[in-house]
Image (cartoon, rainbow, N blue to C red; front, side, top):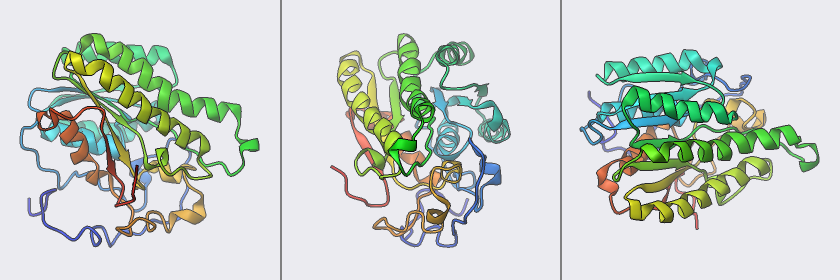
Length: 298
């Protein structure tokens, strides 16, 4: 292919033709209906066998960052189990097809991450399908803006924590007995963990929790040869943004506040997950890798 993730380019000019537009989708949203389409690396990601023979479980794998990571993992040689909500089947089947086109196995296991029984069953089914798990990506997430804490419902607060934090706990706890030395766990946190928006109190709080969970668990598991790390995206163009993740009036300017002056694309996140999943990062544990367009973090 003429262009891939190694192509020399001006990062401020990449995706300059893309202009986010005001639009609204009901949760959880679909990549298939996003305008403009998010770049998942379908036409550009080139693998080099860095994950050959690996067995990956990815949550939120139907769209956005999870989908881009699934595509990249497959092209690097991994088989992948995809977790997603049943209403996201259309997107999930497309990603499964791309994984199969890469010559790897794809297994789809729809369900709701707020359900602890589903989370444990997801791990069991992944182990049965793959013969084990050596890469776990806790990426599924919920984000809804709210401008006044007094109107933030208990239900939304609870749903956000169950999706973003509890599911990570349930799935990781169930997966650990199946993970051997050399395995990796990668959690998706956010720039919101460091510079929280006033309209994302519940979401930002979960992302800070994910960061701390990652760093604590990394110390616990490092002696066992299992590395735990996180990726902290900045403003990335995914269905999350148009399903009340952002107010409509902010979508047109989404990402322009970053030093690079633009929003990011899921394809720009996938290499970070590949790095943390591969042996190239063998001495990296408890790290939060920021992919946020240049915004400073602690």
